[in-house]
Length: 107
Image (tube, rainbow, N blue to C red):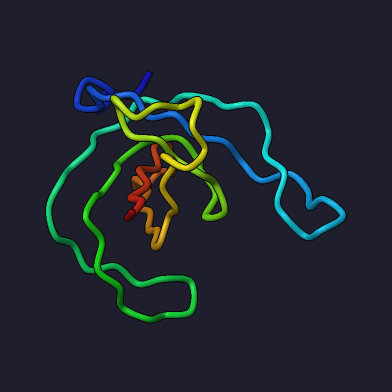
């Protein structure tokens, strides 16, 4: 556990994309949870193509959640895939010695 873990007071649920079915729809792995800090507001984030987009949530976590994952915020119904949120931007920062990497996910 890192020295910053006490700041990660929320828990998010996510599932990662594994493959595609015969019709081209993505398949997802079993869900997992991660400690996080969830901030609500208005944020500007760069998507994977470098386009600036508006986000309503920022999730800070130590977990390496891929951009293709589906994510549920605390209180969301994780049994309903339609309640999941897509990651529209990601960034990360590591300590100089590489001992800790925090990731920001924008939804």
